[in-house]
View 1: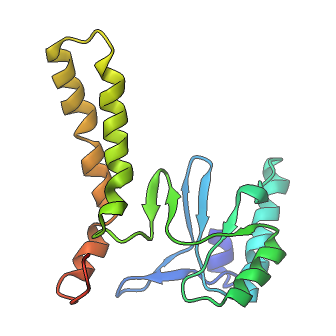
View 2 (view 1 turned 90 degrees about the vertical axis):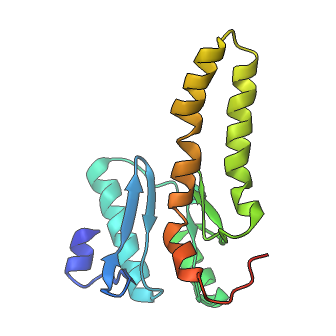
Length: 168
């Protein structure tokens, strides 16, 4: 992907005032390819994915893959979906268990985090853990969840301050 961007074959998404190019985000076997909505990018993406398959011997599971767009016509999404043989996805979506594209000011955005905490607490309740052990679990595990989750929304929240946007 880096080579395709460097050679001008794939046009990445430009982020921030400096226009930092972002074309791919990866963690283990989860990959997001991010770029301009163009037929040229579709061809480049298909070539990159096919090259990955040939070099690695692995297969991309297009049935589990989605194409999504922001300010992109339904016609282009349909074209891209057919060309890449994948489904059309919509915002918000989950990546690494976190909702991407959700409004951080809505209570519904935080429900998954609260559910994780409830499940963890519920599973510990029926175990033979001392009071001190439960405190250690809360401090070590549960305290990390509410820190990790909001980091996704930190920049979005700062950008919304003073915008006059409805927060309900």
